[in-house]
Image (cartoon, rainbow, N blue to C red; front, side, top):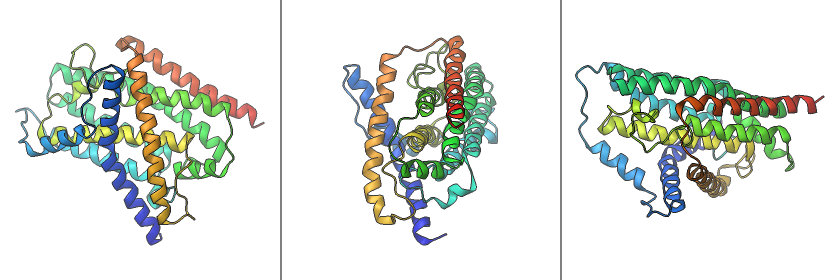
Length: 316
C-alpha cells in the first residue's frame, strides 16, 4: 500500500462523511424550489446535527444497552461502506478487502440494527416501522444484487473500483443492459433511503412512516448520529450509482494525488444533478400505500433481471 493510495483512501472517506449532510440539504432545497416554497439554507443539516450534539440525551426507562449503541454502529457501518465505494478515486486500498456483495451485507447489517433498536423500547411505532423496513429490505436487496451482477458481467469483477476503472477505460457507449439496471437502481435507491414514493422522510403520520417510526425515541447525540448515518447512506448510494453508470471524472491509480483536485468538482457536479433528480422524482410522485411497495420493488427486481438477461444474451 503506497502512501499516496492511503492518503487518497483517507481523503475519500473524509469527503464522504463531510459532504453527506450537504447532499441531504441540497435535496431538501430542490424539493422546496420545485414545490414553489421558500427553501431552507443548504447547510441546514449541519446546523441541526450541531444543535443535537449539544443537547442532553433522554432515554426511555426500558432502553437496553443495544438502544444506546445502535447509533454509533450505524454511523460506523456507513463510514466503512464509504471506504469501499469509490467517490473521488478508484485507487482505494481498503476496497480490495470487500466486494459489492459484502457491501450489500453491510447495508443489511445496518438495517438489522436499526430494526432491533426500533423494537427495543417496545412501542407500537418502533415495531411497526421495523417490520415495514425489513419488508422493504427483503425486496430491495435482491434487486440491488442483480444490478451489480449486470455491471460485473461487463467488467469481470464485483469490486466497485474495478468496475468503475474498467468503464472509465472504455469508450462512451450505450448498453441496453445498463439502461435497465440504471432504472432499477434508481428505484432501489429511493426505497433504501426512505424517499418518496416508498417512504416520506419528512412525515410523522403513523400510517405512512417507515424509517422515522424506528427513530422516534432517539434524541440529542443519538439522533444526530442516526440522521448523519442516513445522509451518509444516501451519499453512498449515489456514489454506487456513479461507479456503476457514470464513473468518468474519478482519479485512477496512475493519475496521482493532484488529480483529486479535478475529481472533487466532478463529484460535486454529479451530486448536484443526482440531488436535483431525486427531488424532481419526489415532487412528481405520490406516496404509495404500504401494500403497493412490493409491486414497486418487484418491478425494480424484474428490470434488473431483464438487464442481466440482455447482457447474457448479447455476450454470446
